[in-house]
Length: 592
Image 1 (cartoon, rainbow, N blue to C red):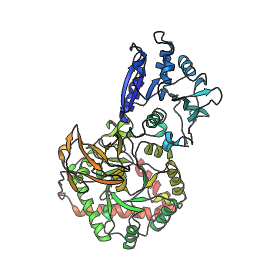
Image 2 (image 1 turned 180 degrees about the horizontal axis):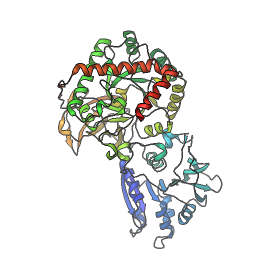
Image 3 (image 1 turned 90 degrees about the horizontal axis):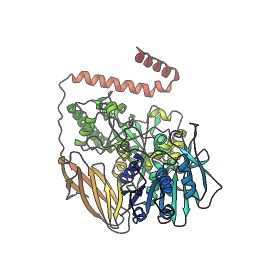
Image 4 (image 1 turned 45 degrees about the horizontal axis):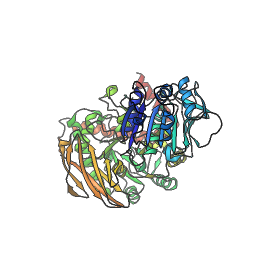
């Protein structure tokens, strides 16, 4: 069983607990061993292939007269992989690092300039994954340091550097790979966030440690084998053109530059599709698909906490999409994109009851939660945020900082890009450039439809030679066995309300399951090079009732809003004078 030994000396520090917690989060067994309390040095080397130790503990070990002088050198020589983390310019730490590197590291320096960047090596993709070759910043001057080396050194690999100095490096010494990380902090997985995780904020005290642990245990850590992406374009009708978007030109661009898209289709428009465009979309389902974008697309319609209203909206949106599919033969993914990015925690529970696969949004913070959302780093490192009703909410980003998409892919998330028709006002050069950057992040990146992305996004790790453990997030998944032999897949889906589970199916056939420890659990044998379709069924009911209100008045308001939006997108957005005037009027209204 994969095992990580966290070796400490003296009092256990928060960084020691955090790095053990991160290893456990990745699915590894961890043991914290205090060598200052262990009478025998062998206690620190209990047949572990992997040892992690802080620079603070390492310095204390080298100064401890009760330990044999050769203790530290034996530790590093007898272990295949060692990570020394938390390295700063403190004098005893610098002396310790210099000692274990035979003087290669002369000193450790801090940075005062906040505009320095991280530069990830192009030569170690097996370690750096989607971050390979990226340059981004600024660095965190409060925590980040760098090494000054005496000469190039033999067996030295500079993995990440800052301003030309090594920040994260590897030294090969005989049978031991020694990794050094010059960052004073280790991520706290239980720390509260602002609802986002960005590369600039978290890279230095999270990604290198994950790189190391995944390098040591590539199959035994939780990982998503599929790297996938999609561009979601919100709002447009299926007509020859909408605003700056032309479907024929979009398809040409997707073929030329190698990407695929989803249209966030507003269900209110279900009777307004151009059948010629519908045929085009249907014929090119390999590149283009639909998902559900609200219902009427009124302001904050899914941000309400009124469950009956949410149920009505979801029911009506689904019925409209079903009618649209019958009229046009264009299928849709049962995935919700919230209008204006606004939603309530209750809306996720309602979508779950209506058997939606997932939701997509630029923000994963419910409007009713506000600053008290309680989302931690741990919550946001999963492929989908499942804090509310155990329903998967996938984050998406605007095409700006490619390093954040690298962070998503590195963490096992899909790369979901969001845009509107205005993105294409100057043609398709901008999207071509960004798609090229995304495709460069991973040689295995696959552009898929939204439903396939949701069903292909899960975590797995090898538990035993013939057993693979899986964590799934949606109610339907395609579990792939890419191995050359049959494997047993132990599948688990966290569910805070597993009493609502009514059954599990494998390839359409009822399958045994159990609900334990807040999760739906079951096992299935999947033959070599095969795929199993897994479905978890929930008790589904609708509280749908027509609202006792002036339906005509409401319908007229929605109609006016939709047509005004189309006037804005189709005409005003294309005229600089009208657009400037509209923006001034809008700002006057805000300031009134």
